[in-house]
Length: 150
Image 1 (cartoon, rainbow, N blue to C red):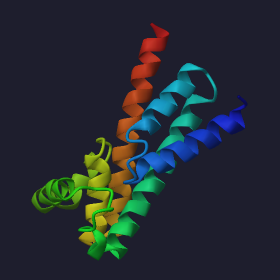
Image 2: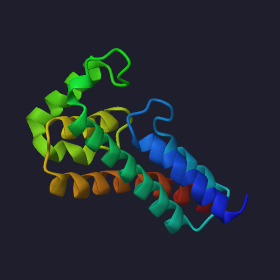
Image 3: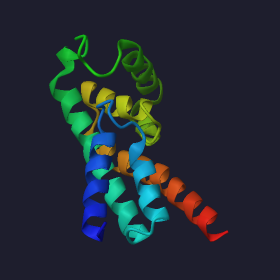
């Protein structure tokens, strides 16, 4: 696999994993770690691609939440009512700062949709999501680096 394919595959995987689509929960960190372990790219670049695409996915969640609030009760909607209620309760309790937890599997994706549903200020949404995604992916990258170098 050449570096271009590695970065492109990581981008697509991270973008999908960053959305509320249930296909690849948490797989962006795993894909990034796998590519780092295989030395298939420059680690800081792999981290940047994974985080950037994951933030783009979270932004799509926000936009979907903002524009399709009325569809959340449909049976085909990928997040259950229970997940949405839990995320909404967190959002009500902690406000926009709950977005810093967007790195958590499933809940993190739901909270980005909730932010859109509740029309959170995008000027706060974006830096909090960037920080949260960087934290989650950075922790995996640092942990992997520590394991490999031992």
